[in-house]
Amino acid sequence: MSTPRNITVLGSGIMGPGIAAVFARSGADVTIYDVVQDALDRAAEGVKVAEGVLDKLDAARGDRQGELSFTTSIEEALAKAEYVLEAVPEREDLKKQVIAQVESLVGPEVIIASNTSGIPITKLAEDMKHPERFVGMHWSNPPHVIPLIEVVPGEQTSDATRDAVVALANSFGYEAVLEGEVPGFVENRILYAIMRESLALVDEGIISKEDMDICVRWGIGFKLAVVGPMRLLDMAGLDTYNNVASYLNRDLSKTDGVPQVITDNIEAQTFGFKSGKGLFEYGEGDVAAKRAQIVSQLIQVRNAMPKPLSSDQV
Ligand SMILES: NC(=O)c1ccc[n+]([C@@H]2O[C@H](COP(=O)([O-])OP(=O)(O)OC[C@H]3O[C@@H](n4cnc5c(N)ncnc54)[C@H](O)[C@@H]3O)[C@@H](O)[C@H]2O)c1
Image 1 (cartoon, rainbow, N blue to C red):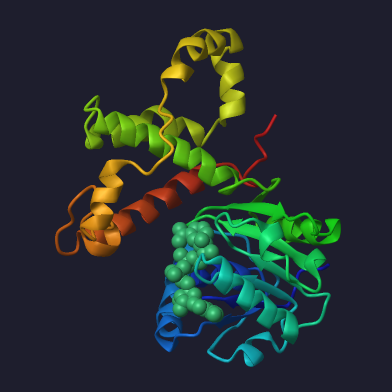
Image 2 (image 1 turned 120 degrees about the horizontal axis):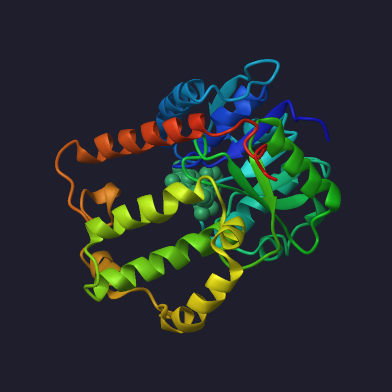
């Protein structure tokens, strides 16, 4: 499959607009579909912001700038689609319903990809007529800043579909990693392991939440942008890992529930940035400033990294 000229993104919330901006910059005309007109109005603004970020990243461009259109009509959204990415809310029933709707409106050669954060691809595909053209294409948030896509084939996904998604991601300068199906997919499993241990140590009073963030950012995160955990093991010495892991692993958090501090916040309806209070409190304007600071620093870090991104792999 060559790079699709017409791509449809279904769902225009946190993820859809940034993804659409990346596709359009690679040369595809992108139609964004949502059931809520307000979401599409916000998306138009979101795409502009993402385009500004892509400029600052000097992100790869295709041979043309694709055009963007917005619609609440699924028929219109899919009329010319050669590639479809669904980014509707993370509910299995809803995603299955949307996938069935798409299948009824596009030809069997059209790839349908899902941005699900962890619903098994095989499960989402179980009622499909052509499950061989269905695949997980999991972007990271913010999708126009984080250049990584997890490609997750289900049991019935064809090799051609899998390879086409990897090639598509590479065509706009993103790294694609291939994964087997595992709950949460790989990236979130690693992130949630970090979050589980961090929450446990803060809860036990071993470290403050402010110092936890400094420790993880500068002791771990900074390093991980340059060397991944597999290479880090070689760098540290496998004998050292063996010595430490033999007493430390048994002591790490094994809690299998949601930590109390999170359930307390859920009960109090304090969800973090979106409600101005979560683990930290935010005053008027603080959330917008924090978001802008995070994106700006991510841009600086990414601009300091080699291009193409994994060209420094030994
Ligand atoms: N937010 C993240 O950090 C993140 C990261 C990676 C992957 N994801 C995944 O991406 C998907 C979308 O997440 P999000 O955070 O953008 O969600 P969101 O709730 O912000 O946006 C979803 C959008 O889909 C729209 N929608 C609802 N029903 C629809 C339908 N039937 N057809 C078309 N649009 C419909 C909603 O109106 C909304 O605008 C989810 O599967 C999520 O797990 C999210």
